Image (cartoon, rainbow, N blue to C red; front, side):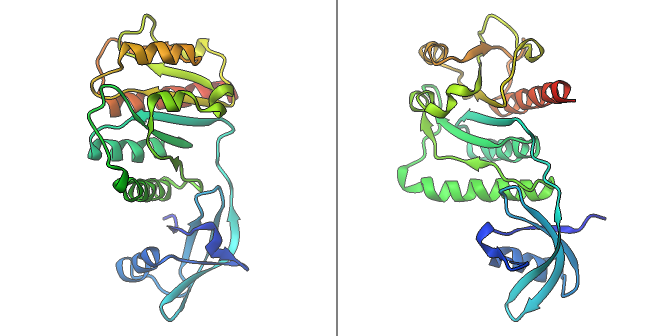
Length: 245
């Protein structure tokens, strides 16, 4: 059985030990009933992972680091730009795309998107989303956790300068062509753009084309937004493995 894993922020790992944050310490001590001397793994969400032994000092729990874990980060970075959908579905999508190796997630406010998050609730929602991707990273044994950015209006997203060097794909149910990633030259950075349950507005598709996005359909069936994100990511990950093996 693999050792239990715990998330520790980077600034809590120093001098050969990692101090568990309160929530992780509670889980180790009171839920898992672990104690001093037990072997565990810790990761910082930034690509660093370690194996070590538990040391309990009063209310504090430290992990004395014994060795580093290999970094399994892919050489190709994938960003998911996904329209906001109902909370439970969006959070499920965060979890599953983390398991499939996404590196960055940008929630989008779109023309036909029905979900609106008040400005005074954004920080709390971001905190929750980041907890979800950290837990998913822990479960699937990643040492990195995806970055979850603040929601952007779709046009603002298209204006992000860093995307200029990306291979850019937008999935649209009325696109003329099915996606064939084996026929597309991929860069080391890829962005996959998915719309809401109500689909894309035609003006949004036109703007995306002008911004350099290749427009494709994922097939003849109409997929739910969260299903489409999983399908697109699984397809591109498979193609990446074929190209890099």
